[in-house]
Length: 204
Image (cartoon, rainbow, N blue to C red; front, side, top):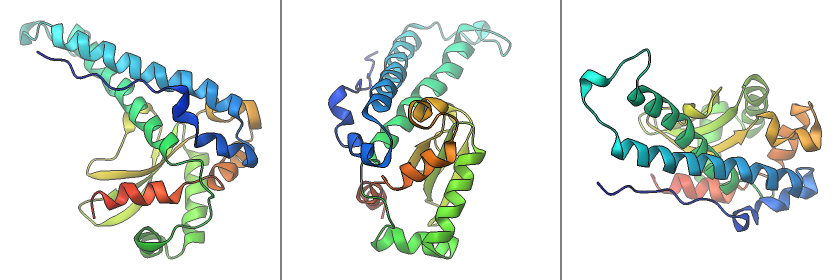
């Protein structure tokens, strides 16, 4: 069976993200963050290869421990982490502010105003242990914010992920120490709404 591997990100994938330095998220932070992003990609590929070679005899599977359980559980974590970071780095490095067009309309419809969404987004980020997400629900045709406590929470079922804000300490500690709220403010000034709108346009 042919194993499809994910692309391992390179330093050039940080180019747009480096624009965040003006808002306080430094190049040093992004370069350290890249190592983690690469780690998720490498582990995703490693697990895909191992799964392709695994004996899938159901008699050897077990919910307490089995190679199948270990690989499948950790695959969700590795691949989820890879996808989360893909969206994180794809949608930062912009000029922040409020979105325009259809995405602005969807946010106003779901939250009442951009300002109400921004307050919800910041509170979600402070409440999360790992991630805050903005997703477009394909069933309801609305946007929602979601909280993710682990890498394997990407994304809510039936949602297209528009924004993924990393709130693990590695995303901000070098620049803000434990002041997560200040990091979130800097992130919001750096959102690339054009990139988020492009993700939305793929399903509208």
